[in-house]
Image (cartoon, rainbow, N blue to C red; front, side, top):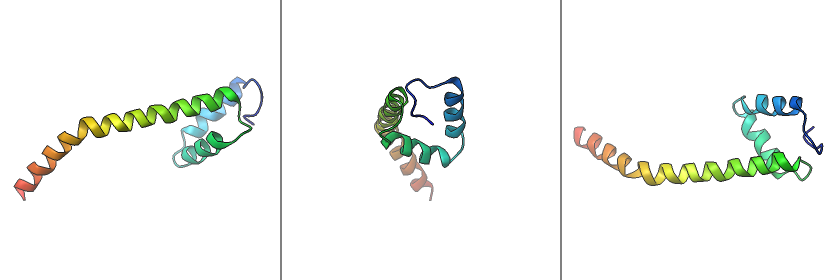
Length: 79
């Protein structure tokens, strides 16, 4: 389905529809990410998504970790 050299608008609509369904999106994402037969453009977009997810998680952990520590200490003082 996503193997053609150029994806059609219908292919992209199907892709985004599948990505909107919880749990199915993770399964489809992983299948497409590691498939050798997927369109190169779609494969590059999937790897770009992985990079941005990694950067986002890293920022969340580094920026919110001190705030989370303060929050946990404040709650433990109340208990």
